[in-house]
Image (cartoon, rainbow, N blue to C red; front, side, top):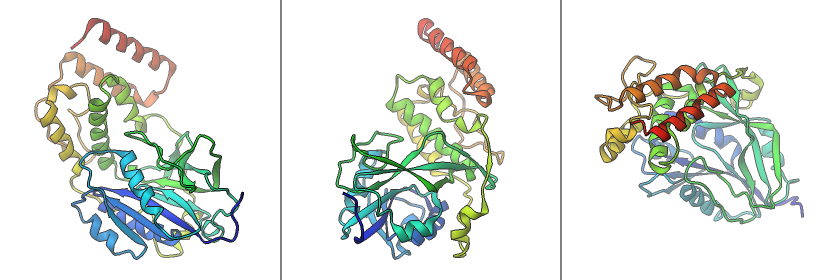
Length: 335
């Protein structure tokens, strides 16, 4: 049964850990279309909590987990959203470095009343380049929204679907709304974060090859079609005096500190085939200062090969070459 003429609320769900670099912009934007914004803060130390408290639509809750666990924080957000009193909830799950763009005025006015409960909403995910003038579009349609029916949420440890997606759910692609992903507008920060992601993968998925980890977290260096950002897609925010692409450039990133902690726990050699050891930022600074590289001749050659070929990936010949290297590494136990 479709829902019409009911008390519908649009609720934005956002996990936060040290996102002060972009959080002010995010909350200015989200406050224009969300009825309520739920922030689950994971013990931020950079002023993120203080920023969140300034916005009247924000409900700030605590994520006390010491670990990175996406399903845990997603359930925390969804459970809090279900405490909001209303007849019908539209859950929109965005990270702090994402901005909803497009025909927002229509979205706010109509609130998708023609779409049944239990439906998943998918969006085009537009990755904005560091020049903040163009983007490349992710191949997958991303499930960032849900017309809530109380379904249980089951996620993955990392890169998890953020909202419930029941087996029998209908999927609706939002043609007039998109999500701008702003991670790449601070390229140095993105590199820092991806170094941590690679370490996380090495620890939690030890059977995953170093090649696959490298390819996954260097996809932004591969050939891609860049598309200009249309001024019309940002007009809703510009009319309210907001620049949705504004951010604060930081001199250092907490991800580097986290990487150093992991190296101290597991030892440098454990990460010898992870792309950590020649990580110079675009500003020319070594970031982080990891000291002497623990990798051997084969490891260094492997990382140089991966870096030199990433621009052309995925390419069938490169995939064959990658597979051959994996076999050689496994059979001969190259160390």
